[in-house]
Length: 331
Ligand SMILES: NC(=O)c1ccc[n+]([C@@H]2O[C@H](COP(=O)([O-])OP(=O)(O)OC[C@H]3O[C@@H](n4cnc5c(N)ncnc54)[C@H](OP(=O)(O)O)[C@@H]3O)[C@@H](O)[C@H]2O)c1
Image 1 (spheres, rainbow, N blue to C red):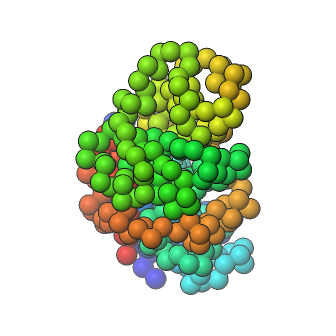
Image 2 (cartoon, rainbow, N blue to C red):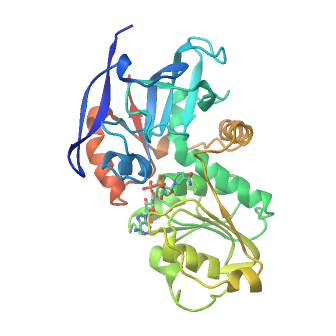
Image 3 (cartoon, rainbow, N blue to C red):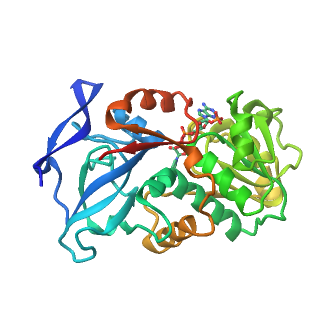
């Protein structure tokens, strides 16, 4: 096995100035860990782009290789949990944050970060889902657990052309919900209708009259990827007893609002975290993604690139310009 491999490396070339390049790394550059994986695919998430520009909320140790997602083959496993050649999927934990991540051809991590590739998915398909799909599925799982089912009424998905939003919209539509997808992209309609959205509305339509204490009841459930004013407006327009999930902050991490939706309409707000999700629900959700929630149009969501082609995609996702999922091929 070659001792060197290709990886995207982010370096702090001057204080708070970050540069990135694809370069050779050595296996000895990887941290300690009992699982060595040859990465076949990774994917680009919003968080990877933050890591790639040196955002201290994501990565603090440089030089660094981002990539919160990785799918590949086990080379060595010291814990006995996996055998060489086993196919595994990794999302979250510290991967790609301060542990070198999936934008390198090898990763070395604790073996309890990995899940076996679920039956019914290829490594490539697992990474089309990636953290975004896993988070979308966790959000749908929360709606279901709170009693918001396909017959409850309209479910709003915000940031709907993004990674989490597009997969959430598609899973909800596949499982019989009436999905209203909100997007800031004028050209999003066709894509979102193909994913199964019954209605596509603008970002502005979600936040219209949002300064009012409460809004007309519209949503039985909401999958919010945006935060800020969008999340506040969605909560104010959620129907009596409805449920809102919150996973993202592309709009803003702030939530400025009153308590009326909670105390007058019994609305619930659930947080969604994919990073530290315990193993039991992690395995359950991957099984769903490989089974009943596997999307017929999964390939249509994927735009594939190599490490050398990743740089402009990082810029695009930072500006909210990507649609669907960007798959990174490492071999
Ligand atoms: N909690 C977790 O475990 C977890 C896991 C995964 C992701 N996340 C977070 O969830 C969010 C979405 O992640 P992602 O990977 O889906 O990102 P993404 O692919 O970049 O999608 C985000 C989408 O949000 C919309 N958007 C972008 N900027 C916006 C703005 N300023 N105001 C309103 N809408 C905006 C855009 O969709 P439209 O153009 O269609 O509106 C964009 O495509 C991110 O904040 C990410 O960090 C959290």
